[in-house]
Image 1: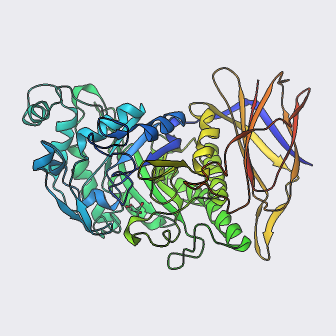
Image 2: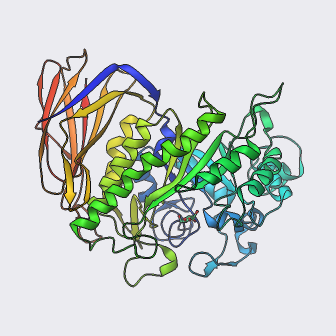
Image 3: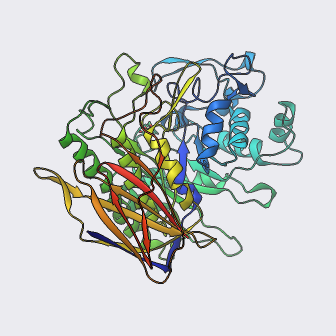
Length: 500
Ligand code: AHR
């Protein structure tokens, strides 16, 4: 029997809702077809946004949406995406599949989508191939309320009122697709570009510098050395509010990612082991951030994370369309537990990507839509948003795996919300063993336990023909006795337990 100790009175850090954020890029059918179908489409939509997808996304409480890229961001010229649609520039999306980008989804459409989702906004600006002026005018266009060339242009294009930009990324992957820069060179550019990301209307835009790829701590050091700055006297903010981190799980390495649905147990454990590596990365980059910012004011923004496999056979290799299985549900479960556990430093995370690209929560095909196992994990974990992480630890946990690829069989995080409800999210990474678990609270004697479960074979997934192969279900087998809640968690499953 494994023991899960919970000290519900020991609050450790606030879980920013933005840890449950999403990323959507002009890539494949991520936006076009997946989110945006245009007002003339037969697919039911509101102002071009497909209603089925928006409705499903509202249920998982999308807190923030990063747009327009990714690599696409450093080639995006925002003025191409405003004004009458028929006169918007058509271009080739060189990064992603070489297809025509007609710019019918642009700034106005993005804010419309965020308003329908009820989420915060995160714009990623172009440093790689854009000018300081272009970036500064975009910020003026979006956020300045008053008389100015860009505010006037916005009004002329049908939107009198300024929008709110909550987060602004100054470049993306500038160590790679965003310009192949050195950290010092980028750091200097960052200092310059961010100067012109102005706070109009007394609203601070949280500025995010491009952080490292995976374990490249030299990038983190070089960027922080060059552009970390405490607020100047008379200024409330320094140069940056966040530093990003990108990490994708490729089970067989970058060159050999493997199938999303056809894989061995060994590959499954390798994938999970690689997902757990997220914690090492947060610690390694976090230790460098601590040297500059011991009070943890700067957020680590893991604004691209997820599993990346070979594309579905027969689909455009540049579209990064992949299926999503219970293996991905476990990847999401352990990753989100890690973010919760490090919510003192991790202030935002965006899964890549929201719809039809990489580890998506939703897949679409024409008018059909399917919710992936990863979607259900986000639904189960929504209770952690805005809650307080509390102390918890597991004892008596075995390892699971094959040969030398072993992972802890159980992994958890626990929070308490404003109403005092304790949420436990627990993943069983073993593909074979069920484990009895006794969760013991420090003081609380819960009167009520509510739980749900997501479980299935490692490669179980939902298709357009069978959309409910894997779905969240009520989990009734929880026994309450005094301060203890006991349950047996089946293999390859995720449980959300709510105690009140
Ligand atoms: O998410 C797909 C791509 O992965 C993004 O465009 C880029 O930032 C990353 O390399």
